[in-house]
Image (cartoon, rainbow, N blue to C red; front, side, top):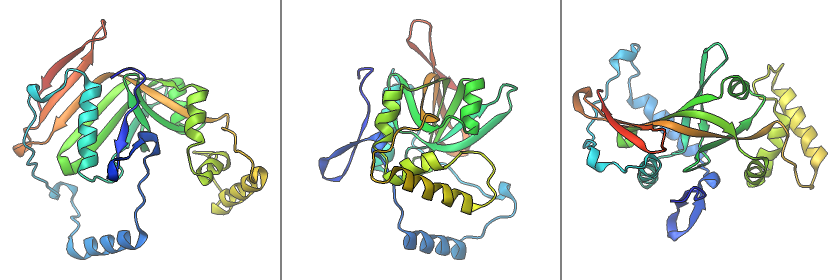
Length: 257
């Protein structure tokens, strides 16, 4: 896989679409029905420790792993897609400020290749300010349907404006307008303020092409460590960590669960 190769996702009928075009829409009625069924049939424990799940994964051996962690990630990502997992590209993004105080939130992976893992956001948001002060971050993927977890950590840098612009203009018009309307992470007096800004941007741009906001764009996390976790019974999970070496190769170690 070349450094310029960006993974595409297979769709029904043999078509393919870039990861940055992946969108999952959940039918509102189905979501409400499922929620109602869950509430009626499941007793929610008051004590989080009372909620238990026994992992039944088949296990992970060193011989199962690709020597390249990006290709190993691609294998597991493809398996998650084929398993029908919704929002398969949803990931936890952990950042920290200059003093080391952490923050975490869910964002969407938009592409990955040998150069790293790409996501997009408002540069003036909390995560943007933290990455400006402390350009290191960690990602976490958890696919419970497969009993699998992936951890990625490394240095973060902004994508080029050309790359950000290309992705920005692939988004729905409403999403482009909202990037102008929302001053992400700022305190709002009420929803009406946000709606008013959206109306203002809609009128401002009309039918004209919407430019990329100067405060909006992508980040690329370049991994120096990646861990693949496979759930096993009795909490004796399989864990393998890849650590990037000075020559660019990867050292693979099994970790205790």
